[in-house]
Length: 91
View 1 (cartoon, rainbow, N blue to C red):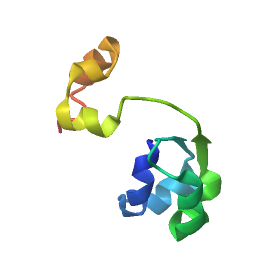
View 2: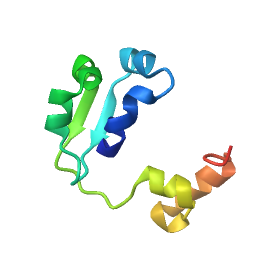
View 3: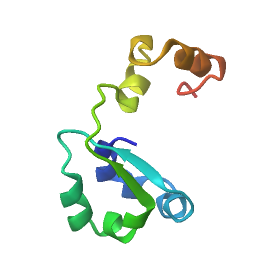
């Protein structure tokens, strides 16, 4: 996930269960102070061992931006075809 999602991760459905079963790879975003977030957020602090932080990681692609726009230019062509084939993100 992008680090920008850390702010609202505690609001995800089944967040506790997901974090107890899986590890999350977190891609840094320039505007997100990850060290500070993990230090000050009780939820993130409690589950800190479940995160693999990739920092620095530069990416101009945001999955949220893609889901909101469904712009094929934001993903690889093969990925976009897979998403269309399996009717992902369009519930």
